[in-house]
Image 1: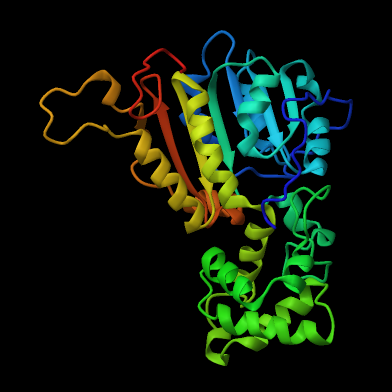
Image 2: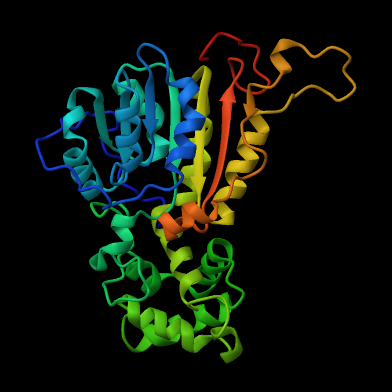
Length: 348
């Protein structure tokens, strides 16, 4: 179900329309300054191109466009409402932005449609956006009554309600366990199946209360809201987030020219684990350990720019409480090609 995402026409530019920029303070992007510092060396040329793979409300994009007057920004988002608001916020940069309705694993098609072969920087700010969390009707929050939707792109795909009311107990158990690290996955799945036999589960509060009642009383008093993991798992499944990320990272890394940089912000261990593994693979030699001289084709294509994952400090969290779980990783391309490739041309 999670893979039934709309394949919009990637790369089609949405012309910016006049509008009122989002007031200052409306949206605080996570790790904004740190992302800027890490990407700046790659964006200081005469005509740099940055891909914001998760445009959202345009907070990061606005900062980069203000800082680098020659920058062209390609912004992708699967959420049509986010694109509409970003068009307004970034309207003064209309001649330098190309906004695309697409999922981030569609980066290659989006760039090809724009006639762009390589880019200087790529930024991912993963997970659910402030816009989606704060809009009750989207169904991402377990603390307010709302229809169980959870689709980041509301133009296509199955809703969380459809998933909850049709998936087998075994499939629900797998989703809750694999995507939410929920230790009571089987109990919750069984409770869902029992409840929906009487009536469909249609709203967020009903599901949250069902989850709470399904787990042992001592577990309800620890680790925050008992429904947190269930809602995370369903959201990931509905939107196919992890599969999209696995495809998007190698595509983004391949698009970077030599000297280009990638920054990824993740918000839970499942995302961070995928990012860590992918960056490690591109940043190490593929030569046998006992090889006396490492051929160019087997040398690392990237170097890591952070030692492990960077976590937010108290200042960052005070400015934006949603940054609490954020983890940042970054890398720079130092050679052309993919790991193990013989090609060493820049940007290939």
